Image (cartoon, rainbow, N blue to C red; front, side, top):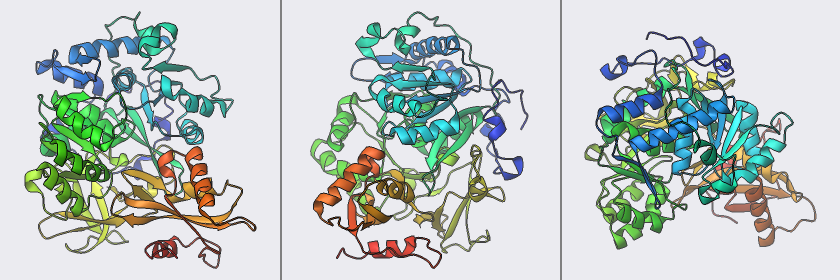
Length: 552
């Protein structure tokens, strides 16, 4: 496709993308993808598309206290863009974003990208050591943080002399904005509501999406303005098919590409609106709010739908018409439980942070039990053996995908593992049946997917090894009907340490305070030794086999 000069004068990310020979083959076969211009700013495109369709006065963002129309949100984004420019930021600078799902977080993200800056959104539950790893990798020029979450971020910034003085602005301050003159809201109050979007090239980077590998070392997937708009033209257009009257809600964080697409970008593309709750969802609260808010589309993980099912049966689901499941494998038992409780067929899908969003899915009317779905228009997928040779249908192998989005890690040797021969390898084992439906089998790496969260076993091991009672440990996932998998730690204690319930709780609490709380081992089994190779490497396959057996 034609290129356009980059507007990003800070070349930090561009200079650290993989060499072209390690890029995936990007395919733009759909007519709507071929029409994308060489110069585009995705936030400008989203707003201009809404205005052209007559949606200026339609609601975009909702919470219990206020509703912002598309026109009002655009003015707020313009004001925030002026604040960012006044901070001395220039196109291509990275801006760390830390916040839960809220109108303020959404507006901040849009302002960053509209300004030609690169959004680096982080999960709200991350601890200081985890945030520092992201900061060290992305080298942000500023940080924007929900006022309630600033302590861990300040602790992370203080861990390095390079970031101790990084400009930090808090947001979501509410009535406290008057007492916080340097908050985003206070500064934006005095800024102009007229602004021009940065004239970014379609190939300029809009965001760095962080994921964890099997070692726990963060990987940053770079996505351009074109990538995100191209993603809008695939799964949302051909499978989701949201409409302007839709009200969207859900649990995935905006820092997770599942949440960023589902709860911000894709609703804007459709001219729909998004409801953000005042407090984190519980299964019962989500079901009740679906009815109270009049939500029509819901995004969450299978585990949450399973927990929501009895409340859906009790309270009903109001106007809900689409329930999107992703983030982990959807067991058929969960699909049927939700269908029985709600009357809705789940819209399942598999995506990847590296691909931005969903590339295999099926609309409710095209569901086949036991399968995720078919390849989304705009993408190609195949099942291959270890050498990359395509397998006949019905055989289990590695999933390989290509399309208009693909993996480009920031300065990471693991690029060569994810992209091979132009194909993306998300790390999943699948089979494709005779009807072209893809059936999920398992992860092909050591990631543990528990209740929709990806957790790296070695990262939990590293945290446990910091505890004075632990001599050795190994962490794997154990299959679980409720959470998909639970984190199981095999621990060898130091001499004189008690292998009792109090010790289990002490180790669990230690992990909760070291890492994001969802990463703690729900089960701890004390053992005398761990299975290792002759060279001393931990045999995780042996631990996984042990995990499938009842605890002694």
